[in-house]
Length: 347
Image 1 (cartoon, rainbow, N blue to C red):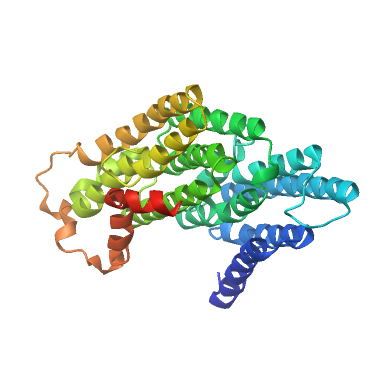
Image 2 (tube, rainbow, N blue to C red):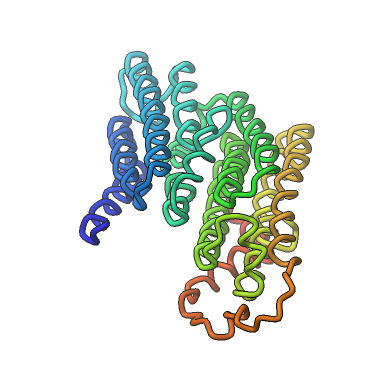
């Protein structure tokens, strides 16, 4: 892709998301979603091949359907209230339709089928944008309309998403699909707390973006697409292999690492709202996701194929300047647990 064209497309993607973030008028929000959707498709097809075209088509059809449902909800709300304001959605039918449209854009269950297929068909760099930046706009709208959302609807979708993420990722050997199911699971955690404490959803989103960006960058540095290729990475890049191990455990939410913070605080907040069974069930479903993260760490760090060929130790001669941006990202993704008291005060 030519640099000027790429800059124009990325500017449109960023502008669309920013328009959604700063607008309180439903029509401008819908226009922002459309700008973002139409501009991201060339990025998904950056490496043109039939698989990328199929993934882009699936993404377009899903997002276009979600946009139509969102517009239908907006029109119903307009007919009922006479206002375009986002903060005024008194009609339950309109609110439910908007919630369904936004969760379809996010990839929450039962509208999750497009996420693994699209992520698998595109490059790692495009997948990184799809699973991080593209989540910001729908979550910001859910954040702003949280008081009018039906909590039972959103909580049902959240629990289904956690189950789908846990069971769906167990059999996978493709890293992009594993990260897609990871995204579905994290979106479920965010959706579960949106109605009760939207600030915690923000915290979870920030932690998820940091961990996912670091994971994608390390996979791109290693040129890893499958678990098999990860098993050879120790001989080639020992440092990045160790970082992948830490990031995988952080994504799984193990206590010494940063990924534990949002899960801990969400379970605590739901318990304060007199819910015992739901957070217990959420913690159990997190174990399913933790299993395939642990499988990846085992494949990455605990398997080293014996060889007498010294040239396999390429890391001794590799230029490490390519990963200079990663250390601060890795530190924030793994070592923020001591900052938890401050986060509790802020929220």
